Image (cartoon, rainbow, N blue to C red):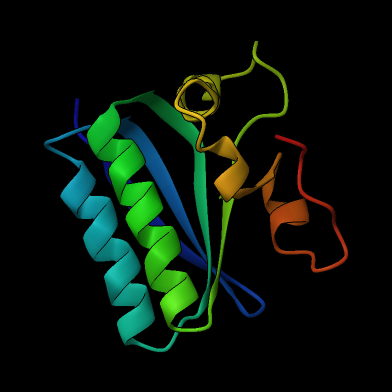
Length: 124
């Protein structure tokens, strides 16, 4: 399966909507998309993972590397993952939780809350 990344601006936030499978083959596409956003001055990035159907260790690695990059440039990284396990995209949430890295990320259930500085992230 291929991976698609679409970029949208929402106020100061750059939202990268990722659709498909996040694995060894496709992880570099996400990594490059985040790097490209930072290179043009975007320091507030949301990764919308609600349509990611599969994520392996390479995908988790790129999420952690993206977090590190955003922190190093004084930026912010937020993830969009469904709040409940029955919703599409919950695979990523389960993988992050199983590996014990879910707590590293600010996770929101949808675009509106992810770009709202008053909204509280979902608990890990």
